[in-house]
Amino acid sequence: MTATLTPAPPTARRSRALMYGPAFVAAIAYVDPGNFATNFAAGSRFGHLLLWVIIAGNVMALLVQMLSAKLGLATGHDLPQMCRRRFPRPVVLGLWAQAELVAIATDLAEVIGGAVALHLLFGLPLPVGGLVTGAAAFLLLGLETRGYRRFEVAIAGLLFVIIAGFVLDTALAGLDLPAIAGGAVPRFSGSESVLLATGILGATVMPHVIYLHSSLTGAHTRGLGGSAGHAGVPKERRSLVHSVRRDVMVGLGLAGVANAAMLVIAARLFHPSGRPADTIDDVHTGIAATLGQGAALAFAVALLASGFASSSVGTYAGQVIMSGFLGRSLPLTVRRGITLLPSMAILCLGVDATRALVWSQVVLSFGIPFALVPLILLTRDRTVMGPLANRPLTTAAASVVAALVIGLNLYLVGQVLTG
Figure (spheres, one colour):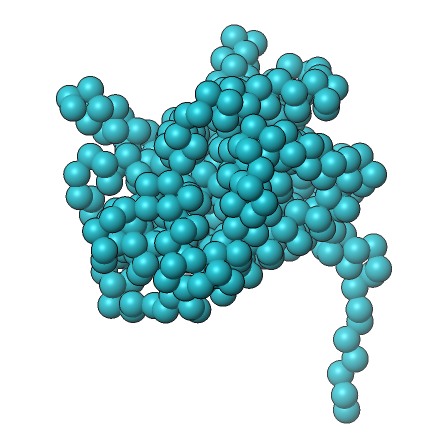
């Protein structure tokens, strides 16, 4: 006798399917141009030494983004909105101010990265490339106004372009498995390696996307019943936890592979020569010289996809930050223009683009605790999360992540002050 499986109701199947997508938007922030700069700089200067930072950062990101996604799933609201509801007004204003600085640093990396890619591909002057990147981000965001699913599909497509580029270049560069295994052992080599490690961490656990992910999952679940509270989380939401977890694992897992590939390629091509690739131009030129023009084209196209996609995601996150913390928002064109100004100033002044990218990621690393600590406090609270509140072990693990980030940042400050 053959057992007959009863299919899930169409509405339940559709709800689970809709939960796939937010993590792919979040994953773009983990492969933005800042990642290119920090990962290639780390690999070219220190070989495989800092591979463990990418691995650890990706594990941290999985935990953090799962908490953010779960907050949106349980409440139907995003992290900034929940901060405004639960914390005193002065705290909320302070969190908003630092989050806006984080958004500026984020946009700095993304616009510069897109401008550099357009220069490599078409020879456009960097200021012109910056304007094109800003316009492309605005067009991508236009998809969101016609439904968040279209925006998510477009961003996921650009993510796969990035991954395909690095899969090709890694296959051409080859793998040094013993060196990769050695790079998985935690250690540093001087203050410069600590600076790059902090930049890698800032480029991996991105604070602005901690805010954004909760908004994306909240948008997906707003038709599934009321928010959490003393009455608990609606059954429909609880049943989607596994779908959210799989979405996070796949989306961020792909981003982690891309980040590791960047460092491995740099370690293979540039570190043995003793000539670090200090700029993205150096990386592009070195790839072309060692792997051929096809590999260099794949790198430049991946960088362009990263710049376009991450700039739109960053602007989207900025809208979530302002509307959530303050209960008001700017028109998208105004928001895009304001966040574009610092990037255009750097491009017009001729500041070293790659160095600006690395330091932007260091700034992002300092913003992580201000997003992560409120997230931990909220997701452990049963009056907020109902049955989806963190288990004690989850809260402890997230607290360790926050402590590590804060400790690494303090160590970096000490190194800078003492020379």
